[in-house]
Amino acid sequence: MLHAAAPSLPDYLREEILLHPENRKFPPFNLTRLLDTVFTPTEGCRVCILIDFDEPAGLIKDFAFLNEEDFPVQKNAHKHFYEGLRKGSMEKLGMKGGEMFAYKCTYGSNLDLADDVWDTAGNHLSLDRDIYPNYDIILCISTYSATAPLTAKCKEYGFRGATLHGLNDIILNSGLAVDYHEVSRDAEKLRTALTKADSIEIDFALEDGRVLTAWLGLGNQEAQKSHGLCNGRTPDVANLPAGEVYFVPNDARGQFPMKYEDGTLGVLEVTDRRIISSTLIAGNQATIDAHNARLKDDPMTGTLGELGFGTQVLPVSGADIQDEKVLGTCHLATGRDDHLGGDIIPEMFKKHENSTHDDILFAPHKTPNFNISQVRMKRGEQREVLIENFRPSRYLMDALAEGH
Image (tube, rainbow, N blue to C red; front, side, top):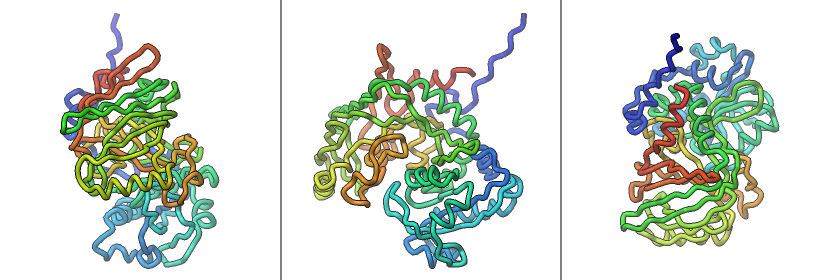
């Protein structure tokens, strides 16, 4: 009796690629394929693009920003999305609209957007009145993430959307060129492998030989996934590139290292799910002092609102939106977590500008001064190693291969 052959393992899930994602080959970026996969159905949908500037009124009018030296993200939005929609994608997908609008830069990750927005004719409009109610699909290609505020607005106004902050050429040619049905399947496999975890422990090895350990209590909760699909008609906002399994911690303690934007290295002390202080390892003491002052002034800024694990086999792009989705990396996030199903909302912060959701990514290119030597999961009587030295464990690789 002949048995049907098991499906072969996709090339990108072979061990030599899983452990060396920089060797993966990708098809060319195709806007029609991306939008069709992410947003099915698209027929009859009105679509628009949002971008951001310091001075949106002048720069969006007649696409004045195209004549400026800066604005690579916004120029990619125009070239690959605005022009792409007009050069065939809208017609192929049965979509309408395709307009581009600009809002004022928020200067912070996931801060609420001001209501002011301008069109390419220079008209001053309202997001709440003119954009959110009148479009079915909104693509936000911006400097800072707008996932949290747009997730709240989509539930109010009924649209679907995607946030693609930090868009660059590497992302276009890798993280946005993949098949999002495969991304969704892989994210679900790893979600199943991690869901209902009681706790996660992360060991960080420092250059001076110290090992810091952070413990995160997850309380047997269902793991969630960012998988890139907004199919159907249900209001939702995808973060693209997608490919992540995440939890909202209900407790945390211990220590973990932090690399600040100026390169300063510190050790963060965590108690009761909150960063309470930072201590200098190397660099600028003033940077540490400023962080400690912020934690003292507005303690909510230190709340840990997310623990995330990348699920995709992708190259480093230099932008966290993709790099936090890379298998073998993990990230913590501080601040608001209402868009993830958590209980930390903007109104709980002392100042509006503090109500960000800031990811702290641990990856070899991002944090070369310390290594994630091991990540461990406890789930009932089950104990599993998830990551070692920024590489997925056998447990995760076997979970991805299951069914092939």
